[in-house]
Length: 61
Image (cartoon, rainbow, N blue to C red; front, top):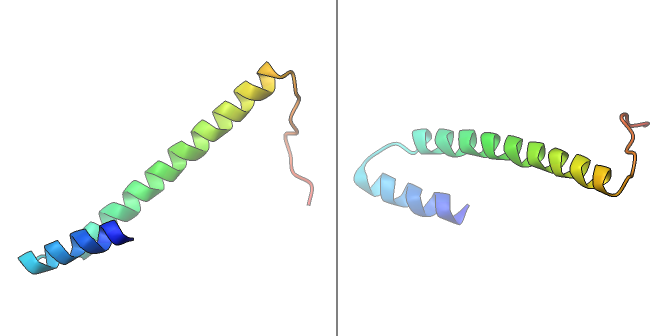
């Protein structure tokens, strides 16, 4: 948040709109979260295989 506000203050000083910056931050956040989840899933499967632990495929609510 502080990084965004600092950059947004500079962009506003230059006279540009901050909407494009906000959209870019949003898109980068979505992509980053996707890859973090994917890597976590991959690493969990790797460690489960290494430890010879069988994980459930479904969640019971």
